[in-house]
Image 1 (cartoon, rainbow, N blue to C red):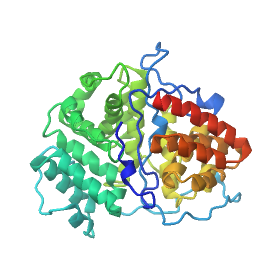
Image 2 (image 1 turned 90 degrees about the vertical axis):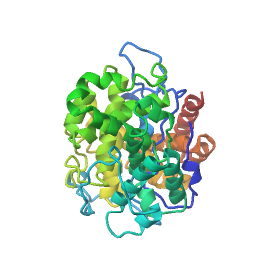
Image 3 (image 1 turned 60 degrees about the horizontal axis):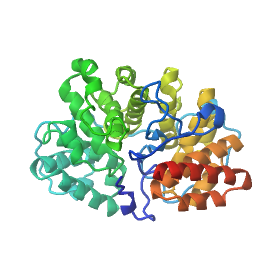
Length: 427
């Protein structure tokens, strides 16, 4: 699997959680359930009677956050803060509602992404128009080349909106290539595979919501790799979640109910993940999500049915961090208030965010995980972080270095997790 995260200088302050990393089709997740063992890469079954399948570990999805402060705060745990009374410490700016882009032909008067970045208002709308026009008048490749150039030059607006911008490229691609398979052939994993998610948004929009239930199970069938759970197949079924949110105008519960129409348990879980991811990231761009609350930071995870909770908690800490000014210690306390059998999920999601927030810096990620209130919290944070190190670097060298920095009570388990995970990652 190609990864363009390596194009970003490690000294560049980028997103709080900088990348979605999806495993390739030879990745196998062979770890037991969270509740009993405190681990995170459990096995999803394609059909409930299947025992050995190639999997994609959705634990490693990184939800994009706004740019983090230049320096990590010197954080200490504050036992006087009651997690049950947590409220956001930041307020969200007003956002502009925008019509979907990427299906009809779009004109623009700007000639570069830099012109959009210089605008004082609605930079996202400018980017969306420009990239859509670029795909329609030039090529998908050109749109990616320009987006990557701006990203790697340190354009902070492009960086913070990157996943959403490649959604735009994916939506525009469906006007050029009429089938999912054709559009996926020109795909690019840059900026956390948002291109594929954008394709699904446009495909479902064109299909029409009334036709979705009867056609849902056939949308991804034309892609190769269904039987082996290929990377493209994962992005398709995960992208369905994004697309269903898009066509349902971000009505989360309606989108989840449509995901339930998928035949396989693994497919349904992947779709749920797309729904919850879209709920978090869409809130950053063009509207307020009514399914995120600044006075109840665990919502909607504490309100959805049990079958949805794990995928929700895997995404929620990224939103919680943003709302609590990236105070990891306070978010650890908030995780304690999660549904009891998903507290470890919350801690591991926070570990993934620790790695993403620090651009996989071993010392800083260690310091964040040690903010956990007890060994359960710390060890699960370490589990999430070390897996993210491996997926970031496509190597276990940095992960092992991270483990060796840890106290003795955490180091051995970290090294074992790294060994098992890297074997499945590279096997």
